[in-house]
Amino acid sequence: MVIVAAGSGSRLGAPVPKAYVKVGGKTLLQRAIEPVLALAEPVEIVVVASREWSDDADAICRSISPNWDDIMVVEGAADRHESVGNGLAALSESVKYVLVHDAARPFAPVSLFASVAAEVRRTGEGVVPGLAVTDTIKRVDAGRAVETIDRSQLAAMQTPQGFPLHKLRDAYNASPQSMTDDAAVYAAAGHPVHIIDGDPLAFKITTPADLDRAESIVGPTHAVQATRTGIGIDVHAFDSAQPLWLGGVLWPGEPGLAGHSDGDAVAHAICDALLSAAGLGDIGGRFGTDAPRFEAARGEVFLRETLALVTDAGLRILNVSVQVIGNRPKLAPRRAEVEAVLSAVLGAPVSVSATTSDGLGFTGRGEGIAAIATALLAT
Image (cartoon, rainbow, N blue to C red; front, top):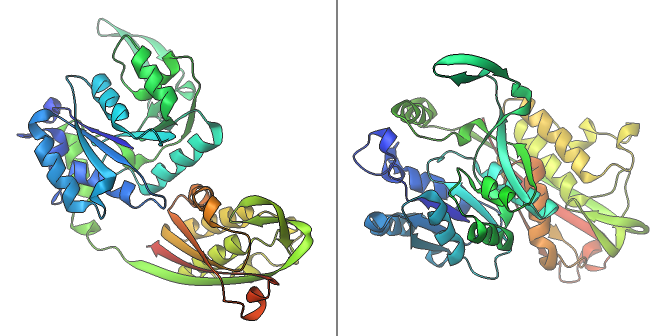
């Protein structure tokens, strides 16, 4: 992750660079970093700051990071293009994918980071969040409107923008000119860029009016956030005649789970936890075995249906945690993949862990799998 915080923000008219302006008692840089630290997977973070403000950036990072070793502050440059290049160069060679984010978009939700990261892994190419343009757009010449642009072909780009690290590094090294965003640099090198749905909260703070909007978001009416919690448990026996779908991914060579659907105990436990927190019943009542459309349905189907119910009830998923109990499959080698898939479907961080029952009970005897999930929703 590269977070760019080296700009002066002259249009904001603040006495300090934009990244160090405070909204609701926190700097924009702090607010930009916090969602990254809430991701379900570990992230290496590089903050690009101007030389004059690097000590301040360092102090901000130290104050909020639970593990300081995961954050590095590097010196920026005269323009964004070179600043991003410095940030990319500082990332470890072990990093495969990178998200580049502007500190000037401090309210981008953690779900947006998770969605971009998951799509980069899936496509192996550039991924950019964008919002549909709703205003009528005119091309102007000398103060006169000369043409109406088809807005159905337009989208307003946001950050974070995600890419395979080595491809973006090469693109920056080969680019002869500064461009307005990382996707433009990546596309100029001949690589495709995919667009996913952005988020209105990921707006950029550029002018005093934008700062007023930011203040309204964190103002007194938003200071207290009510939350609701729920617990879900699901159990399935092994069925060697079926493929194993668990946590939304296929496990080749493993015995499957018996059930009316694909038997994905992780996905089903999550659904029960979300429905419980929302006061919407349980998975059996909502998606019973008497519904033909759910026969052999993948866990992702149930998750998306549950997400729609929760959203329609005016609730928002903050995070989900799942523990799998069983002797197989071995979760650790694919934990990050499972968490990325589930987080992308739900638009919120999902963490997954596993344990055994020390040979006790049906899980200890290798007869099946149990999963316990907890969910936190915001009203």
